[in-house]
Amino acid sequence: MARARHPLEAGDPPVDRIAAEVGLATGASLRQPLYAAIGVSPQAHRRTFRQTR
Image (cartoon, rainbow, N blue to C red; front, side, top):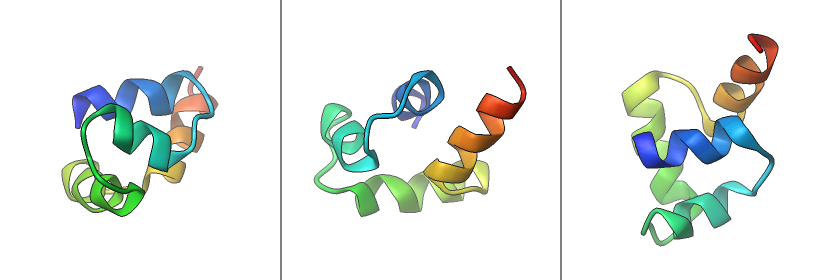
């Protein structure tokens, strides 16, 4: 999940594209484990990170 967090924090690529870049089949394949790991959705993580910059 660490590999997926950087693109979420750094820009606006779609979740499906980030998932593909880190070797996952779909955005859902990224959303579920990311939520389990950090407790928020990819979009919520993106918003939170941008607010703290």
